Amino acid sequence: MSIAPFFHIESDTLGTLRVSGAISFVNAAQALMQTPQFIVRADATLDLDLAALENADSATLAVLIAWAARARRTGATLRYLHAPQGLRNLARLCDVEGLLGLA
Image (cartoon, rainbow, N blue to C red):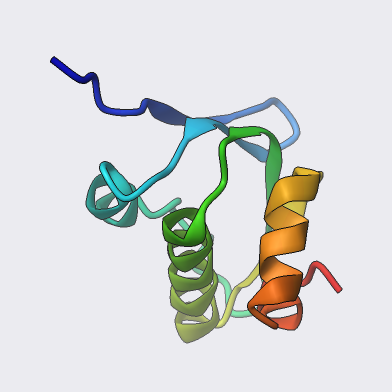
């Protein structure tokens, strides 16, 4: 029996959200349903620290793009910090670094 990958989103005392674990094809739908809560102000910026994100694949990239799009629709800005090199490489290969602010 295969266990689905685990991911977790938590907030630190400075308001930065930390994403840990893995977001993959197995749990991407769950990750989309747990879109980080964006600050309502139109000019708000929310930081997501991705340093503890593991095994990034195209599903991970799709979820991060969807989260960023939802933030933009609310007028907020989502910044991804400390993206793992594998995720950066995949974003570059897919030519979406700019969408994620990784360029």
